Image 1 (cartoon, one colour):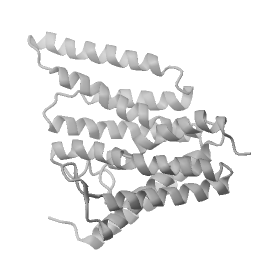
Image 2 (spheres, rainbow, N blue to C red; image 1 turned 60 degrees about the horizontal axis):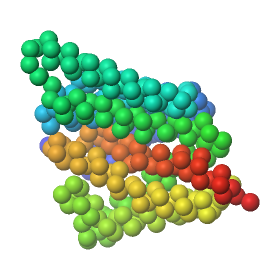
Image 3 (cartoon, rainbow, N blue to C red; image 1 turned 90 degrees about the horizontal axis):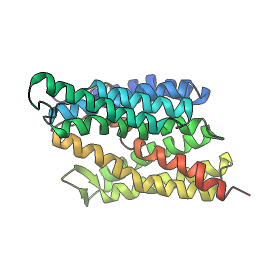
Length: 278
């Protein structure tokens, strides 16, 4: 049974009214609150991703990707990535031991190689990429860069939705996301550019840097969205979950952020120092 449009919109507004103040407060107060929030979100996203994998017939031990995602995300905020390589190595080691032990106990290979590999990949995909949100907040000017990336991404998605729903005619990737159009992608790009240029100029980052970041966000957002859409389409589900009424699952909210966060972090820490605002 379909949910009436007005009821669905009401759910979205209520959910946003509850979640946004919490996210804004964590971003404002910074570490450790932002880091803990990112760890929680990464764990929930990995849980939903593992569920999608199980729908595809993979024998995924959910605790593995969830643990890997949470540890990688928390490490980024608390230790700045110093122990990422060690965590990745331990993740591969212990997940391998787990699947070998299960096969040994059962007397036959109960866990396909794909399940073993995907269990680790999910944790790395969500935790390593998502952990950059916590990493952004702890750098110099982190709040401004976080707002630039997160709000720029959100406005890009919003612009793409409204332009695509009103003017969209040419399908971008109908096999992955039937409603996504090239017109919507252009709308998202323009929206991201406008916000990032204005905000970067007002915040002191610099309009030219805002232009560069806005361009990156506008171009990368469709790929993040399509990546998760590909998995959901194979799993034959519309949303990754129902954790957030009116918005779907946590992974549905994370899809583009997982692509945007690393780009903003490395731009702020590598490119920006080379060309600081005069």
